[in-house]
Amino acid sequence: MSSSELPTINMGGKQRYYEPAPQDIDVDNFRKVITSRRSVRKFTSKPIPQAVLDDCLDMAMLAPCSSGLQPWEFYVVRSADKKAKLVKACMSQWAAKSAAELIVCVARTDRVNEFSRQMLREWPMPDVPPLVRRYYQLIPYNYTPGPMNSLAYLKKAAFGIGGLVAPVPRGPYTRAEVEAWAIKSTALACENLVLAFRAHGFDTCMMEGFDAARVSKMLKLDSNAIPVMVIGAGERTDDGVFWPQIRFDRSLFVHEV
Amino acid sequence: MSSSELPTINMGGKQRYYEPAPQDIDVDNFRKVITSRRSVRKFTSKPIPQAVLDDCLDMAMLAPCSSGLQPWEFYVVRSADKKAKLVKACMSQWAAKSAAELIVCVARTDRVNEFSRQMLREWPMPDVPPLVRRYYQLIPYNYTPGPMNSLAYLKKAAFGIGGLVAPVPRGPYTRAEVEAWAIKSTALACENLVLAFRAHGFDTCMMEGFDAARVSKMLKLDSNAIPVMVIGAGERTDDGVFWPQIRFDRSLFVHEV
Image 1: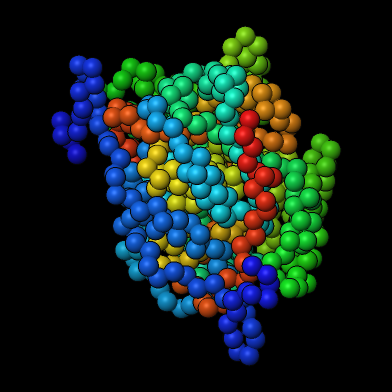
Image 2 (image 1 turned 180 degrees about the vertical axis):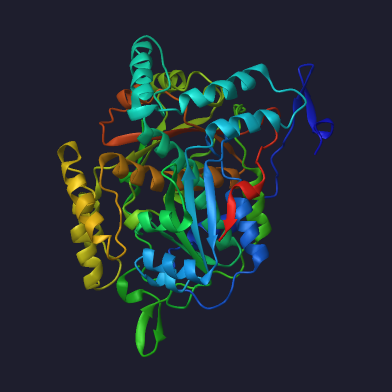
């Protein structure tokens, strides 16, 4: 859509971007996606059509992400040799062995600068608002921990002092914090991905207990690319869900304060 | 459901738990939830009915979680005093100021032992499979970094040596890794939460740029409880979405190998 075609609405004399919410969403149908999503540990041999896989990946990448910086990557492992290695790295569990597709979901910490510039180049409106421009010009400084976290601790100290008098953001500064930042947005996309497969009639298993060192080596990932999980996907067998879902009492988790 | 009522299916002479997938999911309805979810930065004064809020939180907690250990917590901030403080901690941005509900989503690293025991007590089938029992008996050892990560580095060394000859899990061992583990599952639940609000006709903004120190103090969280994000929720205003969604070319993110 060219920016001149953007839908707008008049708000107090100013033209604003206008994206109304659809009114015809069936929440019961959505709830069925959520409740029927289970970790499936055995898949049939039915393949996932390429169009379904593509649609699911596209829906994954519509997840929200911190500052719009899409710190995610998805490796669809197809070659027989790599797939065999990946199954082994997943401890040869059934969820990996029987999966029609295996997708390694990766969080990247090293594309903040590149993507901040790209964001300004591809901004979808005629003018980049000055505050937005400043934001993306400053962002790279936020996500740079420096050697041995030196910059991170400097920033922590500075914001710690500032924080005595007024609210301040508290990170991500250290390398571990920047990694957690990227993992967080990537997990949001992973959740979209498994729900999208479910909505298409397929199932998934999120695997975290895998040999990340072997996976990184196989995919030639450097230390700025963190394998977050491996998702096995396919059609569930009749005995593919091993037990009923277990959720403890909600009072352990929800607090009104 | 008492375990004697569990649905089962005969597989090669053995009775297995049976949870078939529903066949009547409308993928276009689901896609509408995904595509219409935007970060909404201005909300109307319309309140969210309690039943809707509860349903959304329940759907959030049906997200997958690592080893079923539900490391999440949701603080629905309602008291006027706390809400004012939370808005300030969110840098007084519109998405917080105008939200009908503000929910602090927290990742907990300190309930692994307790929940592993509870898992075995509340196991939903007549007998806990021996492998499952062993798994939950051993889990606490996996997630204990020890003082100054001492146990973590011991385990890293041991598994590093083991990993020379066979695939091994590579964590979470250090405190930062255990935190990332809890943040990951909590993010999955957060994504369910925002999608559930969307399916109910409401909108959200995930906020990460907040003063986590002030939020922790206000909610009396110790260092084992990490505020992952603040979610503002409500009904979008006509100018509540500030610009079209920006996603870079998928070839930057999806790789077939």
